[in-house]
Image (cartoon, rainbow over the protein chains, first blue to last red):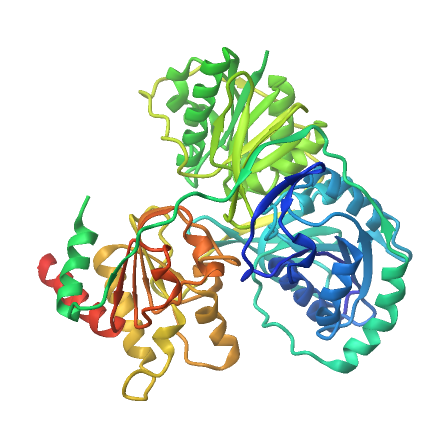
Length: 270
Length: 342
């Protein structure tokens, strides 16, 4: 028997990992140099959450999937051109600042307020998904704070798998220390799941899905509510790139035997 | 004046504190001494009195939440426990290990107390106040930050402080009562994802990283995935190293390409994987580009084996790069290590 789920995925946008990042400090606090022109992608772990959500929604007819994303709407539009081709979802954009330096508590407050106001959302059927950590702030707190604000006290972080049962309960695998998973069984929705990698490959682009999505995404972006994030007393004393640049010794002229001997000595050294 | 609370929890035995918890105790003692602040330590365990014996010499106020519901990590019970401990201690600064258990709940607890949280803290400094160091953009940008709001929760990354070690002795522990919500989640146990050997060893001195090159066509035009697997597992057996991998190698399984069957996403190091702490790291058959190397931020001594003299590792990211065939080198390394062992 299928369960009707209301899945909300929180996913930010982040600079493409291949880009060079340089921090700068402006009147509004720290940021990245040329941040608005850096190519951006959907946050990787949040993207895993989105793909898992789509698979779960597909297995449970009647389910709904929202993607709530906070960022400058011009950047959101760029990223959605790609993401929209992969799976069907309803975008809920929030026009706000980009990057990892704004306060997570303010971010969570805006996200929670937006989710609580989603038309047609039944909180009793809610699965709140997102990445367990972002590739920007990487703190692993925003989703948890959103869950608390929505009054959800069954939360799971570092999730790699969810198995939904006919009775609405589900088993969750969360990453814990030592390369293991903690296995839990939750009685049912509502719950918060901060995803790690999951088990699904990135869906292939489907232009038809993209066209269908963009019909609702573009109007949603035009109507995106502008928001600012309060610093909440957060002050940055310094923001800098790591200074460490190693002097690499490139060894080209040793035989495998000589390299092996050197490595064995290195491994054994205290 | 600040009041400092260090939150700790028991390990799987239920009666001893985790190493990461004892590291947080050291951080708390150092901070309390510097700020001339009062120090309390909160313990979450099925048997907190036994766990507290390791803290007898801290001379800190010891608070505890004990009982069966706290034997296992779970959001609803742990959040209630930490909230009760924080309220009892009336703490303004709360230090805790960034363990899976506390990382799951700390932000929620901070919110309940009207406070703030910052995680993955690698150092605590400041002259008059408290300043915390952490990384942004997956270990690519380092920042020092401070907050005016209290209580301020700081989750400390493992390995950033020495573990507190004092002579065990009976300790005076104040038990704190907790009002639990209706429990909807049952923890059924732990599961090791890889079949056979457990290849992730957080306490190992050496990290061995396998890149996608291990399953590509070699100089004879053939793929040697089985041989690669044998070489890697052989190396792990003799050295006790922890195994990491690049995302591309783990992803190959889903793309129908040859795979190393013992690798999972949990082995992944880098932008979308872990950032482990080991004294040394040896990378093999991995191109060493930025998304991967950010996972090496806390590996002190780095070496790499790669056929490409222009790979990322040669551009200031490793200490030594050997331009060589990893199959040949690792076969020799394994035979030398086995001979040494014999």
